[in-house]
Amino acid sequence: MPQIKTTFGFHSTAEEVVNGINLSETRVIVTGGSSGIGIETARTLALTGAEVTLAVRNVEAGNIVAANIKETTGNPKIAVAHLDLSDLASVRAFVGAWRGPLHILINNAGIMALPELVRTREGYEGQFATNFLGHFALTVGLHRFLATANGARVVSLSSSANMISPVIFDDLHFNFLPYQPFVAYGQSKTANVLFAVEATRRWMEDGIFVNAVNPGAIATNLQKHTGGLKTPPERRKSIQQGAATSVLVAVSPLLAGIGGCYFEDCNEASTVSQRPSDFSGGVAPYALNPDNAARLWAIAQTLIS
Image 1 (cartoon, rainbow, N blue to C red):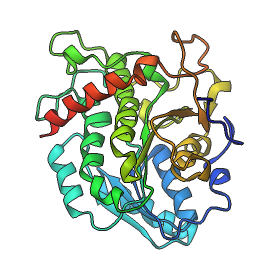
Image 2: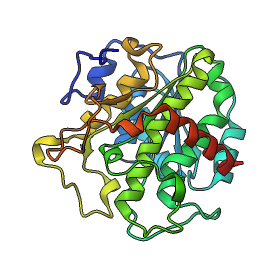
Image 3: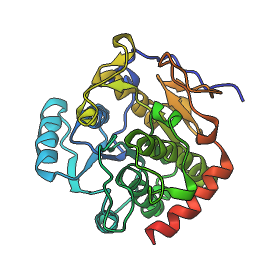
């Protein structure tokens, strides 16, 4: 199939993407909505009239962001709920408290390149657990609410780091391999693409479509362990530009009924045969492989049970 192209691109902002779109009857969850591009994603969706819930680890910070969004957008329908994606009990509690249909779920939260190996209480590697497994448990848990929305969309945030590492099926949690911060990060971001592939295959008949996005290189606290962005200045984005692809995949009429794809710069990305040295982007073939996606789903189900 031909690549999906839109009228938006690298420099487009989230506000430009939602221009003219009314989501006043739409309910949205944004994980990590109290920092980085999560704030801009939530704020932009609030501009459309949507009911937006910020699912955050730090509720106090979330309340400050929510108050600001209400004030600057004039939309009072902004809520805050506690969610620690590294803690499966917290995920279950969030799911258990949710009521009513869910039209858009943006799995935005993430951590990057933890310098030391961190394990969750279950013994899972921290980046895999937070970036992928927590979001997997959240989305699976919310499936019935997404299914009642009649055309729900899920956005799974990945990264160009998908080209750093495939999912290491034989040692997901670095029990044997020496821990490498960026390999662990790359694995988790590949997993987020594979989730989009398999979730769409399983759930399209329920009217649920899942896509993965690379927001681009944006200076946020995500890079607190890396010493800042290493991307050339001409390939960097503002926070407003960084939120654009997530928002486009979540709301654009052009993408109705589209799932299992990987988007960057507001367009479907090309599959690459090797990792580019010029920061030009793309997605690795193993990240879209349906067999890998089905295998990961089966493993993830056992890990959250």
